[in-house]
Image (cartoon, one colour):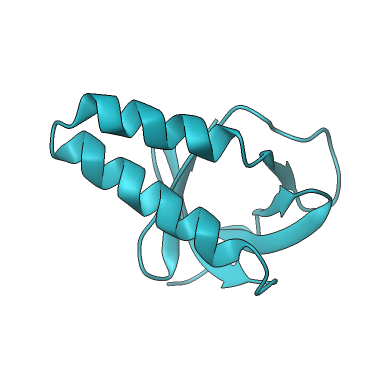
Length: 104
């Protein structure tokens, strides 16, 4: 996938960058991104949690999805545009293999 305009976000937890999300396409309201993992520490936990929550939603297991999403919120994640700006604390982020969908 080719970059689309060079827009990037950093996925952060506890002041540490876990991954960079590089914009490759837009399917509004979602930003479709290539994921560039930066840190081994904590990234897989986040990725696995979002995949499990999305699977629960798709399967119609709403109570489980709500429980999993609450756990994701408790991780204290945020995204920030590369190059500065205020952190974005309220967002949805769904991972696939090496891509992600971001909405805020």
